[in-house]
Length: 385
Image (cartoon, helix red, strand yellow):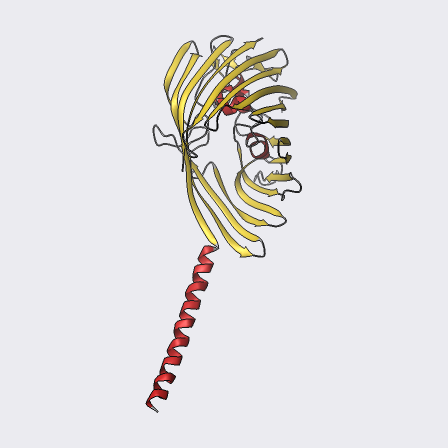
């Protein structure tokens, strides 16, 4: 009888232990289905610009090729192939610790969105990149901008430098045989004027083993910032003088545009260690009862000499009305590890017509040249975490 009582006491205890273990496993499994990742990137180096309003510049510049950032990215598995996702990404100047001028003081000015990923595609809502970034920039169809941001497309008018849209809802399809499509709409948020300050972006891309293609179209109504002299160096735009008493008349970005839209095509092909890439963009500006289009043609080569060493050479031709620009760019990356790399690059622009030279995408940092020529060089380090 004593032995039986002991067995009866042990048996409930055994069940309690098994139940507790099951609850612990279930809890652990639940946590395993969710994750939050802290990530970031640091880009710091020395930049030289030959002519900024008649003066040379040499200095430490942070985040020139790849914006300095930190962020939180999370997922939660909802079952049946569905996931809740979010991304909160903040920018900063590594030299001062302050926010980057071109993005503004918002805590998560680079990205801030939440959404659902499913077998039928991904829907996200918030402040997001358009498809010029997703499909063109991340497709590396611009070797010049990859080598050096000042070698990138002038004034970032086609948004390949990485522009965001507020109040945006975005859909990206799954990949079908390498083909993916996407669409984004940004609500203007102006009562009684549904289209004012609104925007949309659509895109399609193909990723094969060696061949990559992309096409996008983005249109922004009443863009918040445009400075034709500061971004392009032109003396007139849409029939309006862009300078007054020798000074930039729209340095606050208040040149009034009704609409700015860009159509873009990109392609690349990998031949062993050599990748040939290029893109064509046409950006049309409408305002002051006029219309003007800026065309950009770019081609270049990316060659992997070794797994650690990569060389880049590219050329751009840009034109609008009676103004045009020619710009060659060369550069190299040396990968010390998967997370740390060094890069060096140089770019040179010659402008023709009623214009002064103004290189690439970095108009927030640099001012136009005092003449038709401008050169830039940079040596820097990148670390990712």
